[in-house]
Length: 100
Image (cartoon, one colour):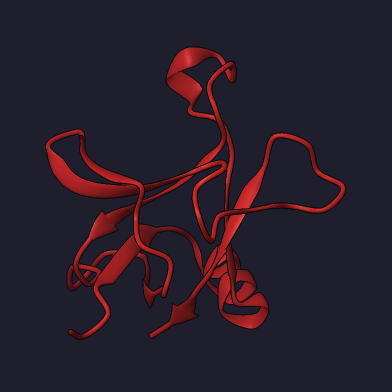
């Protein structure tokens, strides 16, 4: 099966950082005042035409799927297989990605 494609809405600076490093970072959700577990979030499918951001693939399967403001998304939770802590930055996690 082909790897699934995901996307993030972001500015050019973030796109370059992720493309150059090969890592997509995440932190605790804002909705719960930073008290929840850190996670990486993205929307399902390629970046829509005309949107600012980037599409990517990862070999790390999402921990679960959910809706973000009515759009289907994926979440990679802290502690899940393949989701790594960011060295020296407490409360942040990362997954390896390939920007496409």
